Length: 339
Ligand SMILES: Nc1ncnc2c1ncn2[C@@H]1O[C@H](COP(=O)(O)OP(=O)(O)OP(=O)(O)O)[C@@H](O)[C@H]1O
Ligand SMILES: [Mg+2]
Image 1 (tube, protein in one colour):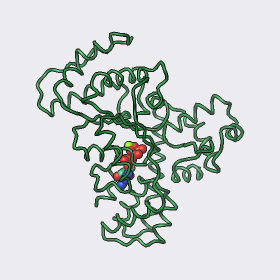
Image 2: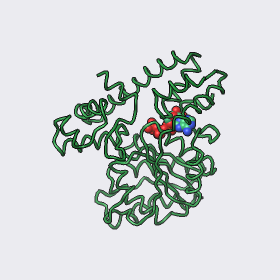
Image 3: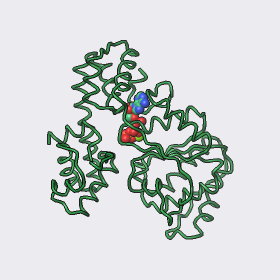
Image 4: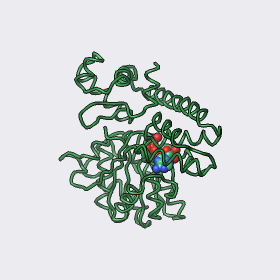
């Protein structure tokens, strides 16, 4: 089972319906552009990034921003690991990271660490996954700007995330940002169309020797929308249960559990979920504009704006072209509606 494998895809042969995106991303990376992949949860950002790296046959490193509070340390320790995997013997010291980053920042950091590794490697792609969780945007941006200026030929970054917080300062650096003037290519990863979603269900079912007629495909797509993550989970369950209805029930149950655990873990991060959930409840009924949400929630401007930011950062809420906010994920919407 390849298409319905629930891990992020790494083999382009099993990356369904993203031919254009894959070709474009590989082309950008091939010409050493730094690329930012934007999109909601479970849309396939990590899969696309990994498949493009495979396609290029380039050496790569992954840094998951959810696992780290300090980007510099995470970068250095991944580079150290990478270096030992290459059997490079040179000593790499973890630097003393200055508290006040000033003009010495580059020299102090590079002389101790990055230079030591980077001198010895050939081309490397570094994937920063879920960059909206990076702390301390200014430091991150400074380090990225330094790498851009010094190692552009050797290192190419792919950065994934949703368009908020740190991401915003990377995607759209203001004149005062260290990243200002350095070109980054933005790619937005969209939902699958209905026909792509149904095509995926059919192709995946065929692979596991099961039927998927049009009617069933349409019904599943209608419930799970064009979200590759949930469609893949359905496929995984279909493979086990051999029955689309049971698989669908199982998928909705598991997906709600995933969503509920995510909301729990957000609370554990110390993020207030009470007010975001009030916003989600309003949006689960009907997509709304900011001004409408002010009325629906009774929140003030600043409070609403802060919690909407959080929801966008989590990839749960998006804003459409006419300025209405909506819940990106039908499962999350159903879960919230049930209370
Ligand atoms: N184009 C695709 N073809 C086949 N499967 C896919 C595709 N895109 C995503 N998937 C599957 O969907 C699930 C989610 O994919 P992935 O982890 O890449 O998404 P993501 O946007 O990085 O999600 P998250 O927000 O959880 O980080 C995985 O099970 C993956 O295998
Ligand atoms: Mg991901």
